[in-house]
Length: 271
Image 1: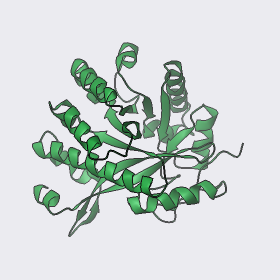
Image 2: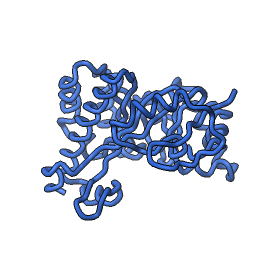
Image 3: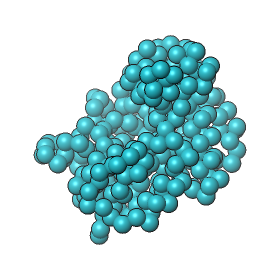
Image 4: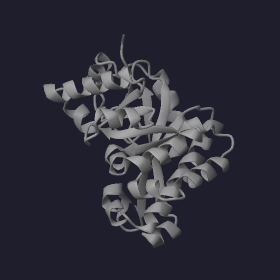
């Protein structure tokens, strides 16, 4: 993995995030991939477990932030004003120099408003050390960076923790979204998360939007923002501006069969 980093074998793909009610482009999530010289394109589950708790994990995390901001600058140069979300693991987040590294990354891209970068933090990460997590996240907030609580509903956060954590957006875990059409309890959980976010004045976005039926169910519950294979598969940054242009002008699709990565019919309310 050290050699892969030196050989520039790691790449980022980006999954679009949209307003499902009108197709408006909102942002993209940066997703790490390893372009292995023999095994092809590897997903994070194939290599990230070997990095957990290592110094290389921290360095790779910084690489992701730098390259995600560079990709965002390319989109802005193409006339696309969106945000980028970056996943941050437990070890990098809790490192003493994390906030300084985020500040430095932003300074290297002075044309990007800090609010166009969002750090996605796992709920379990925030709960492991609440005091330190709050200090770090508050410091990032002071830089102008947005914070999202990822995989919400899979951890054990109390309402007190929920109120204390300085986040701007809740991300509903894909497991609940995928099951909500067939499982009444999953649908109830999604609805409760949407209402909770609304009560506390936070945004909410759903991942795992696989079909127009999922999108319509989420819209019925008051969740407008989404991402998932039914909207678009992750794609290289050079495809992002063209995809958003195509998505904005394409008609509502009744069937979200993705023929190829990055070319899925848009999911949009017909209302």
